[in-house]
Image (cartoon, rainbow, N blue to C red; front, side, top):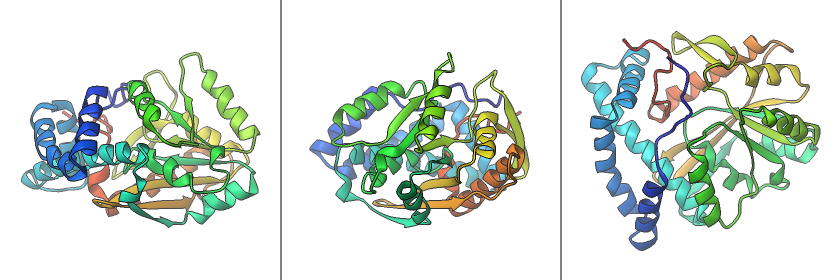
Length: 292
């Protein structure tokens, strides 16, 4: 089944090991360990490796041999983004540089205090965006809707170490209480950020083409974004070098009250960012429901 099961890679123990290395040996040592960790996942994370092979081979058109090499690099870059998140959330932000491309749109929304919706994806490293947003005035107006149940313990652990984190989390709950939190945030003219590329079993979905193949997406994000009268922006934080990130912000163009049109605009945006950063697609499951 193509829907995500709510579980992501990583465990608190793994984070603690990397934090120990970063604090006592340095960032390079943590990156060096990734060479072995990425190889382990290539061999033993069968579901993730199959899904990643399908992405590189079937959707991007690379040969079998090149696809295997690209899977390894994808795991390695994914590990780097996790380490970077640990370093930045621990307050060691000066190790990294970053640049904004279209970020003035977010600044304008924060200044106007009229609310807005940001839609990202599981590409790049959007979870560190809040530490960049902290430098912006009124950054406490940004809410991130979190659907990753397994990562709650990890996020709590990282937050306990963080020196500052103004971003607010709205956690998706089975009792749907998060709907009221989202509406309340928008009513208070705050920004709400969603990831638009994963859904849970039983949730309403919409279908659209991504990289030449139909896939399912969570309907709620696009229904809300198309119907509420606030700006919608697509936002991605992409790793460019070992210590440099690039924040992309693009305004969504779609027909009012047309969720399908907003979704189509979103998939085109995701395709655009993946052409620039093909290794940073981090959906390690049968996204297109097409793995034989």
